[in-house]
Length: 344
Image (cartoon, rainbow, N blue to C red):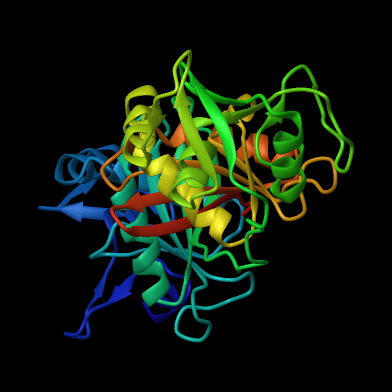
């Protein structure tokens, strides 16, 4: 029995007895490594699995993942009192080698709340393990993705040395018509985008108006660096009014402003990134100078998200050599986590 313990098949409980999780028993029964009897009758793997899933539906997912890891030769152990599978380093032995990873199993199309993801990340942190989500699709294909809390470093102070500019609010964006003012703020921090210029070059002067997103306009208005007017009038729009307009015009408007402010205040150049299926791209130096290291999806603790959406964004980020970050805004609190593909 001790050998089974060291190989991760049974758990030793405080009474000194050994207990085998039902998921583990199913796997060993399928390989004819054990026999299970009840009332002098041999119990089949299917019967145990059905009973296990009736008790906890997620056990079917843990069964698929445990089987996959064991087939790959990995030392994996199903925890009795948590939803996790504990993964050990190659060549390790239970009781001698500490586990390095906790694996949490979820269905590809079952929505999960962001607060639940953050709770799992925090649990793994406290346990001093890395956290991996095993995402299972309808054909039992399993993708492994690591999730970990992430605190970006501050890289510089925001350059707000340019004079206050004037902008006209037109529908859901802001136009700076003064070419000189537009070039000044673009040079200072890549604010906005010149109309009609696909890829502005840093340091080049453009005789074009500059378009700002509402998010950029809100940030600059709160910093006292832009005065906003309603289109066709001389009516000044207050900071509160432009923020309210953003909230009406954009889903999660307040959260996007908070996320934008969080990253801008750390010195990153923040640009829209809807073409990548996320909210923002973060540059350290600026577009055209460096390749932005981070792609960001903005969320809230209560938002339900499909794991497949995280996978899509994560794969896109990997394909363009960027780190996929989820920024979760909870009132005045901002928490980030990275989500990246992991080979197990």
